[in-house]
Amino acid sequence: MSNMAMLNLLKRMSVAVTVHGFRSTFRDWAAERTPFPHDVCEMALAHTIPNSAEAAYRRGDLFEKRRKLMDAWAAFASAPRTDGAVIPLKAAA
Image (cartoon, rainbow, N blue to C red; front, side, top):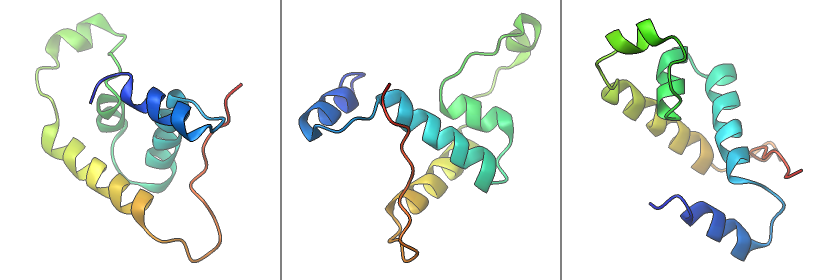
């Protein structure tokens, strides 16, 4: 998926949300509702490691752990809601 796919989708939907809002919502959900480690969540968002020494020694991609995280996100995001709640999206500024 291109980096413009989500932006174009949101434009066509005429909703007041941002692509970053989707990423932020995912990160909040991962931190508050799952047991996945911080590193796995950050790597799923392609965040860089600010500590250069740690970054130099990090060789793996945590692919299997990220796959399990994304499976859990897909299940959460696609589950029918029976409590009347919706997945919160952070509004555009």
